[in-house]
Amino acid sequence: MNKKLSFEFILGLIIILLSIVAFIFVYVKIDINNPKRNFDLYSDFFNIGGLQIGSDVKINGVIVGEVSDIFLNKESYMATVKSSYFNELSIPSNSTFTVANNGFIGSPYIEISIGSNNEYLENESFTTENIDAVSLEEVINSFIFK
Image (cartoon, rainbow, N blue to C red; front, side, top):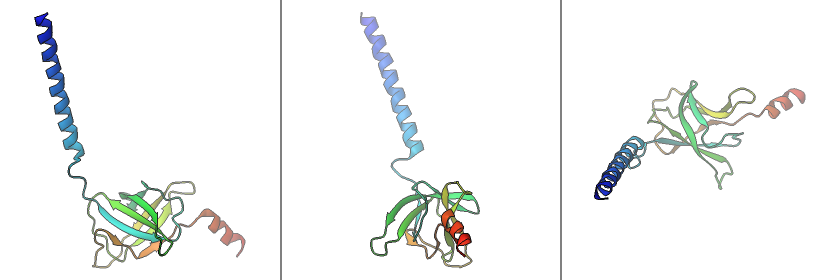
């Protein structure tokens, strides 16, 4: 009986030790203590279409970030989109932010057309050159009624 108790005790210690090592490994990989240093920008749009939290942000078709928050600006009644970037980018201040779609039925995303200004947007700043989403209904109506 004493032999069985010591075997179970040692096996339990091994399991606890392996659990601690696994937890430390996951903690280091996820890096909960020091989250990613995201670069955030805010953009105001009159119409964001079907843009949702988690939608992509692209430069020349390359995903550089995602939409992290969408809320209504209570002063201007415009949709404010907070976009987070995976690492700090140098985006010129005259860059154009457009709500675009992947084809007719594709998911919406924000496309950034890089400007040529030497001044760059800083973290937590607002963009000024924003182009709203164009819906398919608006395009069809413009052909029919013009």
